[in-house]
Image (tube, rainbow, N blue to C red):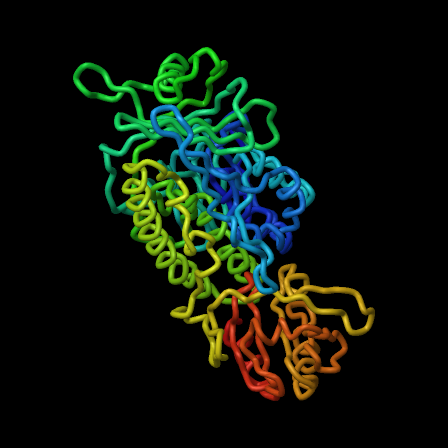
Length: 513
């Protein structure tokens, strides 16, 4: 009989969402079991890389250096009409990093490359993906979930998380409706191709009255390109399934270049615009994350990024409940916080798709119309959440993303960013002004394993000097004002309190427990 395995958390699906969740749990001392029905790790390029908010998440997980090294800056876009270049556009030309947002641009990176980086990081915690394990049944008990596998084996977990994509088996087994629409009129074929003698310094976009071809170089490859195009149709107007020969015909028709210059085509697929949202993210001891919970158009590149940020929200909550630091009610806040964000992402991507479809009807229009201020991911917060405590400043409310700022370690004189103080599985308490020092010492002593306390010009044991005033500026705390800011483990503001109000911090952490 196949073996029965027990684990605290079973993660179904080993894409970026599942791997992010697995790393976040593992670094908190919770060893998950992550499985995938595939028998080999995919080499699909698919998503084109992490956006600025996901880069912040990846920094916290300890992999942003590898991601930046393997990836590339977004390329300028060269637009063509009738085979001739007519306009270049760089949607990030004027975008610069700021003290509160160190990652101003997304990073172009094939999905398989990101997954390799995440798997390597996960292996550092002794956790590896179990391949060839397909879930075919789920049964929930009072204190566990049992997953039945296609090979007859079973897996028992305290909790299960479906990160298994838009066709999620976990979602279907839970009976969660996936509400929305599929637009059969908006189709695209895509794949990974090799093209000879094409300038890799641009994302090339040929738009004609009867279709389009888009070619973007895949970082880290010599001749690899992401290929996207409107599909071929047969005599009846029905779409023709993608093929290497079909890609060559599309390439020749729209670029006016010889089709044989496209020398290889693989991982071919057809994409339809889907806009769907799971009605629930939690059913008992089971959760949904990533494409299993939401799918939308590719405009804005928000799909994979929203999944990474789902996992970042859920990981610390699962870990606190499993370790006994919080009650199970904390897990209800995952749906409470992330479902409204996904609904907003659906609106953003639909808006960007509409803008792009309108733009490409005119010469010079292109995919730069898919990019906007709201596609960075930096603006999403949880002000409505029950985890949003009291207080506010001129700029920040509890639930907002906690900004970065460059400071100096007062004791050593070494540079130290606020994000460096946040890194890890703990809460962070910032005290602005000398009057916060007693509250910082009291909170650190009361929660030595769970909280790190830093003064910002507070003459505290761990003190930071706000040399350029960037920290106060980012947090909306004026000169001479004293305030405490508690930051959650997922780097969102938990509460803002007067500088001497140590009781507010103690009450927040007590209530969470």
